[in-house]
Image (cartoon, rainbow, N blue to C red; front, side, top):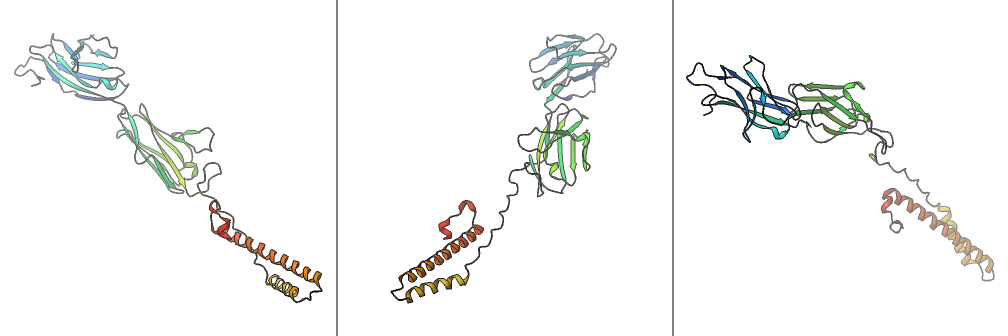
Length: 311
């Protein structure tokens, strides 16, 4: 059994009720307080259980580590072990021991944690323009009542310096920050989001590791250079090729027929009609090919365009 009270001894020392478990962020001083009544000429010592090292006895500190110190006011029943700049390795059980016969003691637990913030949900949020952005940040291990600051990294074109603004300092209307310091929760609300509200939002509690979420605002026109092909541009409508007029086809046939009907002694005239008919026919072929290519360009992607398929 753990003797915390001198049983059947009305004049023996006994412990006062004080918190037996203390949690502190790393680097923030912690106090373990042991209250003892009817101490008389007996001594109070603090023992580190993991190595049974005597840290303090009375007002005297035995350890060479500067982080441990005994605190006591004359006449006070409270004996405090102060741990300055604690680290996670200082977590463990500490024993307040009174030099009675047999000894009585009370054990205390020290938890040293690394405070950190966490944002509920995914690390990236995709919002539609005009909707509301609602970000919830929870803080673990921080000092109760510690302030929480929000930061916004504004969207900027590539290869330009980032601009960081503290949201608590103001800005456009429709932005609200609510923090429950006792529960360790902070909410950021941005109403009617525009492309200017996109970017990284950081929840930064005091003495804690911050958390960041990236917000994308979609379906809205944004200045060129702030995005890369968010909305692929549409190709301009292709011009409609003019179909070859029926007159050209009729003229070709007429010239060829005339060339065949002329007598053999009209060689020059026959040659002229043949050449003129061939020129008209070639023109028809060129116009038809151009029309086919124009139609093909409007129905196929330019990267996979194959002129052989169109012809």
